[in-house]
Amino acid sequence: MAIAAWSAGTAFSVGDICRPTVNDGTGLFFRCTTAGTSAGTEPGVNADSTIPNWPKNAGDTVTDGTCVWTAISSTYGDLAVSNPSAIVELFQLRLDSELHGSNDIYYFHAGTNEFIDSNIIFDSQVYSPVPIKADGFEYTNTGTLPRPTLTVSNLSSTISALLLVVNATTAGNDLGGAEVRRIRTLAKYLDSINFGDNQLAITQGGDFLVTQDGDNIEYKSQIDNPTADPNARFPDERWFIDRKASETRDSVTFELASKFDLAGQKIPRRQIVANICQWKYRSPECSYAGTDYYDVNGKEVSTRAQDVCGKRVASCKLRFGENAELPFGSFPGAGLSK
Image 1 (cartoon, rainbow, N blue to C red):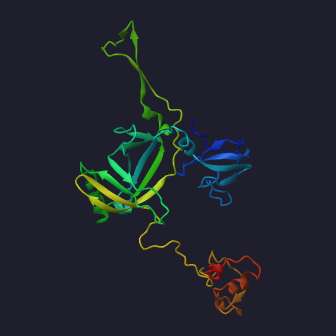
Image 2: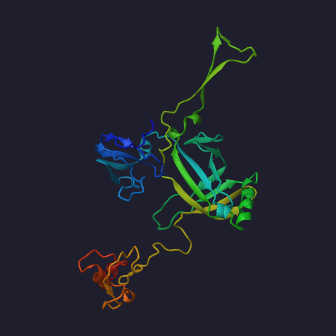
Image 3: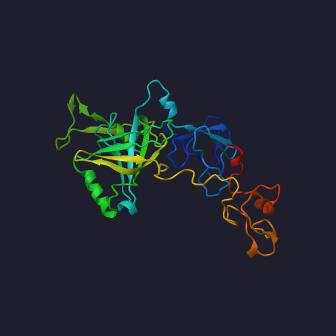
C-alpha cells in the first residue's frame, strides 16, 4: 500500500508515516515521533523562511505544527528482510539546450532482472530497454569521488547520430555536461501495468464462445499491484557526463562525474583566514547600516565618505558593540591550533 501524502491540519499519531506532497528524490518517508496536528503549510513548500524544510538525511527531525516527524528510508526495511524484492535501476539522460541544442530527456533501463526486453513504467513514465553497462557508482573511503562509466550499445549508430547532432550545436561537446540521473527502486514498487493482464477465455459447455465474426470472446483485466509506490525509492543520484571515453561501431563509453568533481577547483572556495574579514563593508553579509563612522585604523570620523572598515574583529566591535554577536566574515580561531 502506497504511503499517503502529508496533509494540512491533520491529527497524526505516533508511528504514522507520510511523504512530502512533491517527490524531491531523497528517498525518504517521515514517521511521526510526537503526536499532534500538522501545520497549515507543508514543511519546505512555502517561501517563508520561518517554515522548516523536510530533512534530507535519515534520522533528522522537523517540527510541523504540534507534530514532530523523523526521516526514515523508504526502502531500507524492504532490503532487511531475508528475501527482498529485486532492485530495479533506471536512467534519465537530460540534455541542455545551450550545450546540446535541445532539452530532450531520454528514459531507459539496462534490461536486467525480469524486465530484459520490455519497457518499465515507473511513476507513469516509460523507460525503454537499452543494452548498457553502468558501473563504478560505489563510494569508498579513499577521499576521492567515484567516476562511474556508462557504456551504451552503438550497433545501430544511434549514439553516434546523437553525438553528431549535439556537436553541431557545440563543437566537440560529445554530450559533455548532460545530466544522467540514476533512479533505483524495488520491483514491488513499479506501476501495476508492468505486471501484465489477467486473461480469461469465456466458454460454454467446453466450447469457446465466439462472436458473429468468429472471434473468441476473452476477458482481460489488468493485474493490480497493491504495493506500487513512485515515492518508494533510493535517493536519486545526479551525475554529469565529463567526457566521451571511447566510441566504436559497437559501443560508446562515457565517463561521469559528480557536480562537485570539477577539474582545477577546490572546495570550499573561501580561504580560511584568521584576521581579515572577507565580507564587503555594508553588504547584506556585513549587515552594518549604522551612522557611527570610523576610518581604517578605528578612529572616529564625521562623514560617511570617510567611513572605511579596517576588516578586523576590532573594527566589528566598534560598530556592533564590544559584547555583541559579530557578523565577522572570517575565522578568528583558525590560528589558535596547528
